Image (cartoon, rainbow, N blue to C red; front, side, top):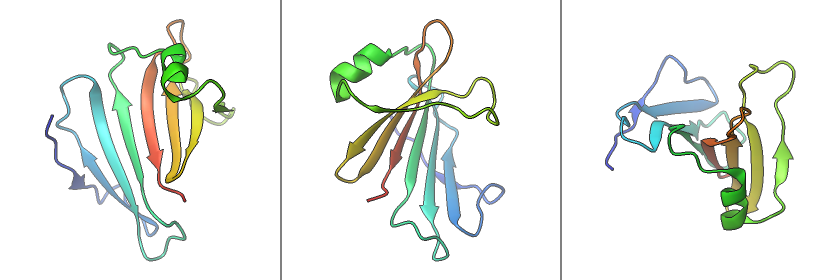
Length: 118
């Protein structure tokens, strides 16, 4: 699947330049976003975010089978929207892999974050 990232000035700021791909109509991706740190940021590298089509429905059990049985868990705060996902966090040599799962009955994978924070 080929897609292109384009700068999004409206959501970029002094710390991150944001690039988005909206031409990801084919499953399993709905949206792709790359956040690259600017010279004002203290981050070493960027973040790559994927929104996953709900029809794909990778379960937490399947993710744990592939990435490990004991991830750190991140729960939404009361200040976040009610449909914010629960994240399974896996530490990697390059940074963090975060897998976001919906909080409905199916609890399907809805987002993947690759955070090159190391």
